[in-house]
Image (cartoon, rainbow, N blue to C red):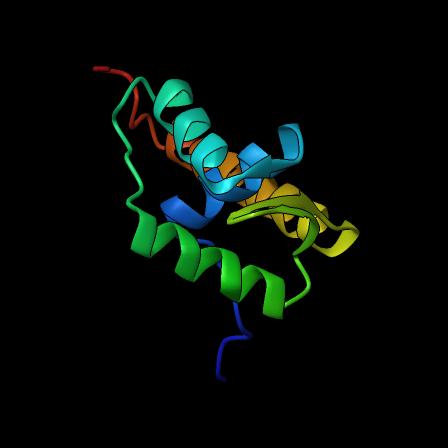
Length: 107
C-alpha cells in the first residue's frame, strides 16, 4: 500500500512544524528556533528549509500570513497541527514500545 504524502515526518519536517506550532515565524526564525531547541544538534540550511516550507504550503500544513520584502511569515494550519500532533503521538508510542522491551535499561 503506497504511503500518503507526508504520512511520517522526517526529523527536519517535525522540527519545522514544531517551530510553527510554537508561533508564526519567517524562515530565519524557524532555523534559529530549531538550532536553539536542539542545542545546535540540528541545523537546517536554507535550501532544505524552503523546500519543506513549499511542500508544507502545497499540502496546506502551513500558510503564508505576511510578506515584507523577501521576508515571508508562515503560520501552521489546523491540518498542520494535526500532522504534528499525530507525529508526536507516534513517536511516544515508539518510545513506549522500546521501554517495554527494556531498551533503556542501560541508558
